Length: 289
Image 1 (cartoon, helix red, strand yellow):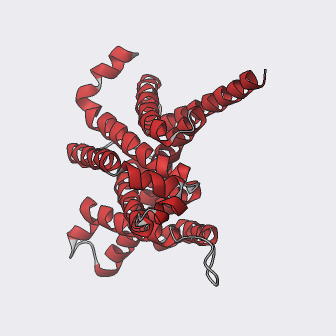
Image 2 (image 1 turned 60 degrees about the horizontal axis):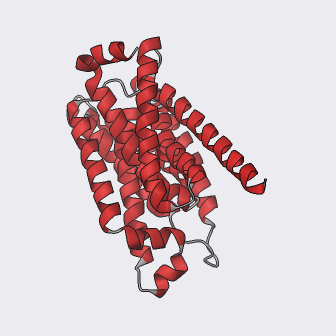
């Protein structure tokens, strides 16, 4: 099985590398998302990113792709996905408890529902657009390019470097906002920066890997790491290790059995979370006995 996977490296190496880099990068950001109990925001932002792609396709049908071929380019589609994704993160990351304003949960639900429905409506009369949205919703990382690999390598490197250099304000903002404010940490600025970077990562990822793989890699490794360790610092190590190990296993199995690698990876990550739940339950039983 492993030898078959290695034999396919020359043909699919960009797919495997892009998938691993996306999984590792999103799993790091997922620790912040899970620690702040903002899992549903990840789903809403992912849907908003799809709305951005649908909007770009709709613009293309209005002004004509033949006259303006750049509208149908991957760069333009990725750019609109990133813009809509960042806007969604900024809208949904407002602090809670402000009198006279809607709760963040309500805004997040609105973003999710409008984005999910709007993306379908915008391409309803475009067979190509409908097919593309369905492809993104189903997820497929087959077709990733060498350029994608370099982009996600850069995203992972910058994410890891930022978390290393600025771990103190980021951890305080995530775990104890009141203390962070008391010692002078600009929590609102850091929250906007983290939200904007999350939007950028999701916007770029969804164009290559689709909704299921993007959202799965964002939350499932971090949730598994949270059940294995309650310390945020350890979660930052566990989450990408789980993401890389489990997706690597999933890609090998998917290639051997000729199954979609993105879906196989998400199911495997879901299985890892079940194992983490079982490990936490066993640990609690041992502590009580």
